[in-house]
Amino acid sequence: MDIIELLDIIQAGETSKVQFKEKLTSTDSFAAEMTAMANSLGGMLIVGVEDKSGKIKGLSNDELHDYNAKIANIATNNVIPLIYITTEIIKMEDKKILIVHIEEGINKPYKDRNGVVWIKQGSDKRKLTDNAELLRLFQKSGNLLIDEMEVYGTSIDDV
Image (tube, rainbow, N blue to C red):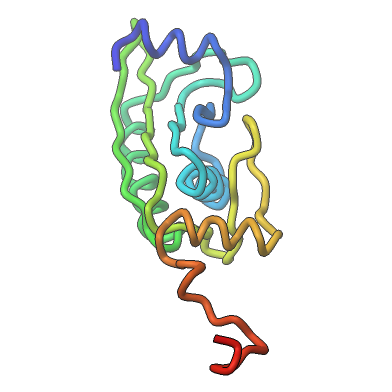
């Protein structure tokens, strides 16, 4: 990604596929965002940009090094099953931005370490509580095939 593309994305604001984080303050919150994106259409977390205003704050070299390691750890240990991410650093004048790319998952549903399934709802995320939605996630991943499910209350005579 180049600087112009990143500026266009930031200027457009947060969406269901783009989230801003000024700093990495809570691993649980970050894991929930990653989980929601993996359960939905994927997306990117842009770290170093103010959450509500979209103002570019940037990260120090120490923060970049620390965050890169922490984010990889979150993807491995705080998202179940683990997800694979890619990161990139974009330098804009004297500021550096960390971009975390999260692909749409193929092993849905993904949960945080507390067992909560999150999905994107516009630019926000929400807990998935409806069983029908949960079944759709299983179906979309190919881990559950409706025609192979047991039909309760039936016998061979029904065939």
